[in-house]
Amino acid sequence: MKNNKTIKEMCFDGRMEERIKKTFNSEGCIICSLLRDDEFELLCKWVGNREKEEFKQRLLITKGFCNHHFFNLEKLCDPLGLTQLEKLLLQEFLREAERTDKEKTEWLIAYRQQQYNLSDKNICPICEVLSRNESEYIRHLTNFLKDRNNMKLYHNSGGLCTPHFIKIYSFLEDKDIKDKLFDIQKRHIRILLEALSGFVNKKDARWKRTEDENKSYIRGLLKLSGREGTKWR
Image (cartoon, rainbow, N blue to C red; front, side, top):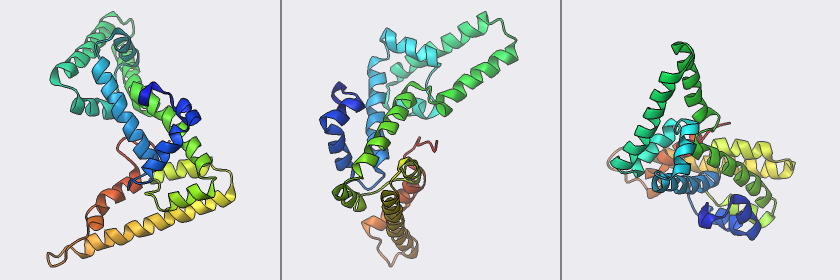
């Protein structure tokens, strides 16, 4: 990840706490913000190393990326680079199709299951790393919030999207911290609802919406579902 350090190394040297505190200034979910940065770095890494043999072999093992990350790669990759990846995977599809001893339907079902696993079971090489990072972030944030001063900072932050709130709430054991987190989540939602109401009530051209109200519909989407690609499990 950043500066070639692993998540655990960043936890050890204090950089993880620094990263978490920085996300408190963002309007959205703390975990989503951290994962969004990681996701962009991983996508760039694949774009920059797509011609290296180790990356090619990794891609052949997984049979590609999940649908979400394939389309995100398209946004970053030049047409030539994307074509190289597509050619590699389609050639492998043909090689397997021509040498399989299985009945065609059986082989296609197995291939479909592999594609399903890319997303649902995090076999996608980008999803795999993000899933591990997410677990580390959740573990570290729960420890971070045990400190009363950190909880105060969290109180005034963008909080958590619903999927990550549920994951962290389920991970916590201390009842007092769980109760505080639950109350803060409700407070954040009430504040968001005020902005959403302002957006709806000021649909008439005579009323000027505030900046907060103008962004509220996006914030509502992110609060409900998390960043694009967020998984509930």
